[in-house]
Image 1 (cartoon, rainbow, N blue to C red):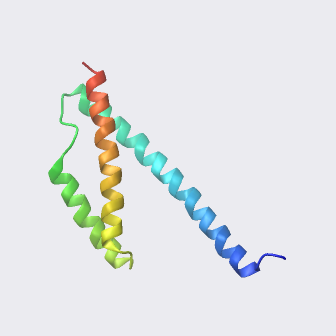
Image 2: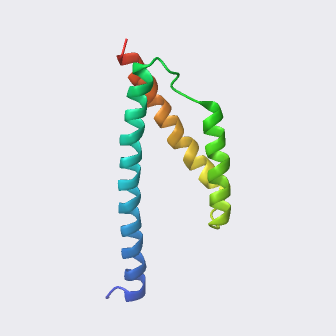
Image 3: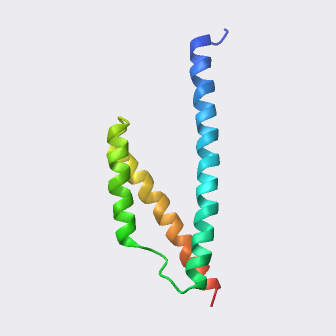
Length: 96
């Protein structure tokens, strides 16, 4: 049975988007690693709760404007922020 060409086209687009998301996340984490090293070198705190909340509010609004569930976008962003903080804490611990 041959694959539905319409479905195959959708799947190819999804695969392309998934690949782009991985590359974007990799670039984001490269930048946040540099931020973590800078914070560790200057004895700055690993997290900035005020900035995190402002970012979440800003991205919830962007999600709403894009017709994306803001609850999902907040969960996704909080997961990323937690991972970044974990990396920053690790960097701070290794700079002692």
